[in-house]
Amino acid sequence: MKKLILAAAIAATIAGAANAATIYEGNGLTYKLKGDFQVQLRQDAGDDQDLDIEFDDLELKNSVVYDLGDDMKAFGQVDFSFNSAADDDTKESAALEEAYLGLQFGDVAVSVGKQDLAVDAFGIENQYEDHEDQSQFAETGGDNVVRVDYAGANFTVTASTLVQAESEGDNVEGFDILAATSVADVELVAAYQDYNDNAGTEYDAWGVSAAFDAGFAAFGVDYSSADDKDANETNETYGLVAVVPVAETTDVSVGYTSTDNETATDVAEWYANVTYKFPTQKNVRLFAEIADTDAAGADLGYLAGMQLKF
Image (tube, rainbow, N blue to C red; front, top):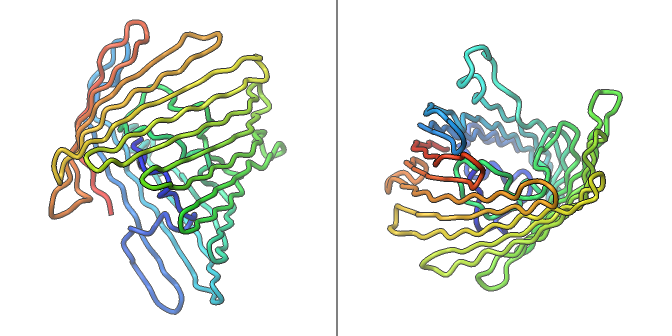
């Protein structure tokens, strides 16, 4: 689940395919295909876990953009994940991860469909596989999401809402917003979420994060808090990370996440990983990671893998 440490790199919805391979471009139409293939030899941190080959990710993202003129664009994206089909012999089909359409007006994009929530981009953790929640936000995405993205020169804002579709069996509703900016070499993010699944989980959550690029290393810190309205309690999560480029091709990350629960048991997790990018092809990577939690009976987890992106 590796996230970008420089959170202000968050851009408008259609910019997600910026580094994809262009399959067709002409007559105002651009079709791009983006892929992320990752295979890991992994043993999760926890009690009595087994070594296994895991697929995370096996994804194909299709992006279509029409230039409508007058600084307007129509766009759509359909993403498929083959993780489950690879991990489970009983599943032979791909899973639909995102499917949305939208319009862009200059720096503003409006999209509707199955997609990420605004707060999905929150957090500074730089971990390949986390075992504990990294924030107090519900990073679930949804089938009924309306989202607005603004991407300025030095300021981005994303807002999204979950449209309640009770008659269709989807009773979740909520609103969230995330804003990011940079001051000198510091990236600052603030986020808020109001969430209610109408099944016993209702809360307000907020969070802030900062990331500083010192040149020789990048450092990040985040904090989030949620007021659980049903349980009448407040839970908090904070994280720390440092990313050190030990060579032009190699980065080392170390991080720590801790959650303080008002009634449940507190839990903390630490991790360390190394990533090697081939000098001739930066999107071909080898990586390894170790992680552990302070949960009772938990054993050290580890993984090693390879990733191809385009």
